[in-house]
Length: 139
Ligand code: CMP
Image (cartoon, rainbow, N blue to C red; front, side, top):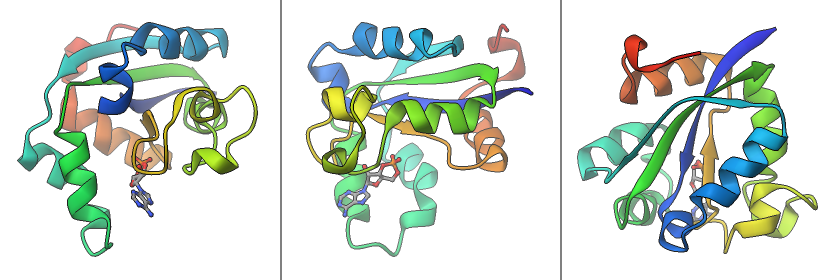
């Protein structure tokens, strides 16, 4: 079933000029980038986006990292896009990520793991809506 998911290319990756290389992995995996914008996330945006992790010990560090440099927010479309992108990203901790995944190829550590992808289709809708208007997504 064709669906959409939300992706962020994180500061550690934009700082190392890896946007194009990561997009190539995404496209080679059969996902289409149907919306994309480079932004500097504000503290308010990052806090809201990661609200679910507010009680975790790494929350402050996470917000700081995500606002430290530009990110690229994206909408990806394809068959089972949410699950497919999670496969393509690899495990959250790059030490556990499978060969060929974005995190195995590019991530530095669990906090600087190069990409974010929605963890459910319901969250994908909420995350997309935080950054994109319907008319900005061209499938
Ligand atoms: P992401 O998919 O963006 O969702 C939450 C993020 O929190 C996760 O990727 C990691 O970058 C970060 N994270 C998860 N666990 C830790 C941790 N133990 N220490 C620092 N950051 C973490």
